[in-house]
Image 1 (cartoon, rainbow, N blue to C red):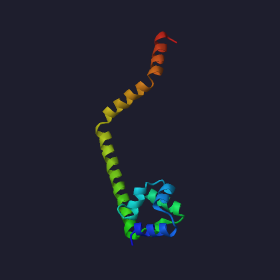
Image 2: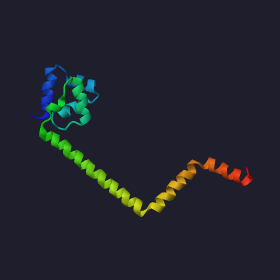
Image 3: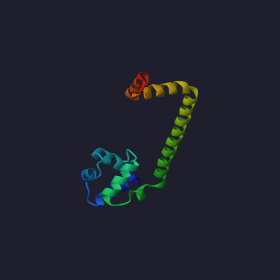
Image 4: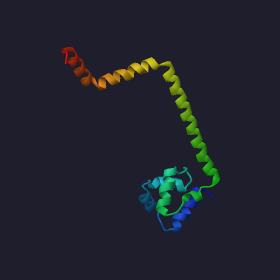
Length: 126
């Protein structure tokens, strides 16, 4: 039995309509319908708020194959982040001078009035 079917059975056994569940969780009615029809896999946030609304631990309804799908997506995201960090390191190594100049210009613009007054004070001899 899929997660959506289990969720629907639990919801109906507690005499909660889809609309009531939607209002209690803050999820749209269409999202609840799509989860129950197994059109989408619920996000971790959706699982949390549905569990709180129904006063149960819905993680026990998620079978191991669905859990592995979540783990795979998480692993994919970590791999993407590692690739991003490697690309960022390469960018900094190859273009550090340009990045330094950009940061310096931003710093100068941020503290323009302080720098200007300091130069004026030094010029006058204060």
